[in-house]
Length: 274
Length: 278
Image (tube, rainbow over all chains, first blue to last red):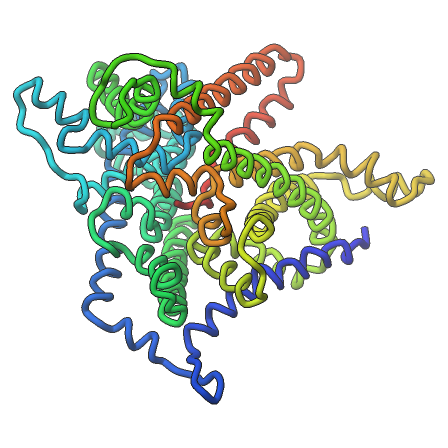
């Protein structure tokens, strides 16, 4: 088939709607309008090196990392249980994990406000049981909870799909060779499931570090996370230069973590496993 | 041990479903506040259809989802065939650019498109939101179709031409049926992504054109109307019913086992789309 030209409409589309916008953001991040026209500047990036903004970046990364770790700790056992032989109704279980994602995520996050409020559902149940009330709404804890809630399926599903593909005879062989359960897990199952763990980590960390909705609904302040900061620059302060610089920093952050992940994946994809 | 496992699974599901349960229960709540329960009512389901704001948001959500997924599928099918017949180097360049909207955080995609539209002096509204949705949909359509093209026998198309078909006929009668499952997957993926999008729509719309997510976001701080709960309960139930029907029909045709497995794989990919963030 010599039909190369069929791609040209989309190539034009890509240039207009994908390439040009990215270059515009890059342009605004290093340009400044003066009376004589545009001139190059590093001011927007220099402005970022302020403890207030550095702290926002650190907080975004820390909260996203904490959520990723919690998702991994909660998700791995869940994936392992679902992948084990005892569970016969696998398809239904799989659907049950995917189904919550069909309801609008804003609404599900909002429902957590109902649950977590001082007079909310959870506290009503706790007071019925004569337990002390919890008050975490509009704190970092609530934001982490929101992230874990929204992204947990993204951790469970890739690990589950890797675990369920592991050949049972490999595990039996390890047991026959004298490995106890812990050794078999550590030396055989865990290394084999690593690709799933890595894609799970990527798929939780990326959206968690860039969100501005979860922190807006469940968190307190004006700009909790870098996503909120970017939104504010474009929609309320109208400071496109600084907002673009922040977007460039966010893109670099994502690129860097993707690079780190893919390198790790390659190292483990080769002979290292066996 | 078995008991421990069962309770762990139960706890995780309780965690995942607690907010959904709350939403559904509160759609039947007499009181407008989300704090207390005042008794059972169906009035929010009645009032829902008289609410101008919600109905207009529903209209725009569905219209944009239908239009953007159809246009993205059309462009995507044509582009996939073009990309497939490209030489190695330009092909990988185009594919990498195609990945950009998938890898970029939604907020960056949304903002860069907003900057573009304002730069081009286009008033933000229905058209800009539609263009944005088409832009983030096409990459997923292409990524669903390309594997099908690779699986296809290269000589089928040539054979059709040798047997006297025009290129257009060969496309309709030979290529399209071969890649149809990929086209459908891509279309459904585009449709659901568009239906559920918040971040990109938020930055690229204006002048009163809102989708449901934007309306919900606007309401969230003041308190969401139970009418929204009613609407999402209805939508959730309809998706559930659709799924049960599809599953029922799928288990009925046992004769086509191979295609069923294939279809399952595709369904899973479409249900579970990693690229989108929140």
